[in-house]
Length: 236
Ligand SMILES: [Zn+2]
Image (cartoon, rainbow, N blue to C red):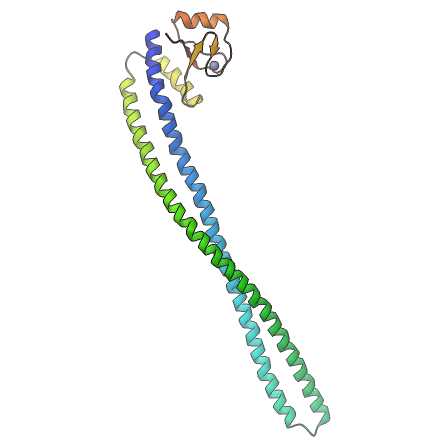
């Protein structure tokens, strides 16, 4: 059993690095995806700001067109009023219409001007967003290159460790012991073995009962920590 434990310890040495490399291979893409999503959100926000500005521009154009039409109409009515000087009632009606048209024109112009202010504010905002986004995109590109390099390095490390692990899976380890070890390894995130120091498990720090200490010392079987289930071993 001491021999089996020793073989498992050699395996454990590799497996903690394997787990670390695997964790990197999961963490890095997740982090990258999060940053990319944030970047996409900002791209979308800029597009929305521009769409909003464009919509306002269309409305400003509508006010301008309305103003133009009203002005043309007002000129026409003014001409008609000029040739209707003799007819007081008609003249009053024309003058009334002209006043109404002019009021509406000034109303359109006022509303148009308000929108011009809003569009200018939106366009200023869009420009600021665009500059911030350009900086963010540049920094993301650098970050992305780093992530790709780190991923490649972690993958290379993992391949190397996996190859070494195959070599260390010698006949010394019986299948049932290996199965137990692998199960705990997965459940305990890369640490299937725990050192017993005196009666304290060095992984979960509980004091194990005396009979557990005795069984570990005897070394005729694999003994699990009652606290964390890891396989206990003693140095020496
Ligand atoms: Zn424990």
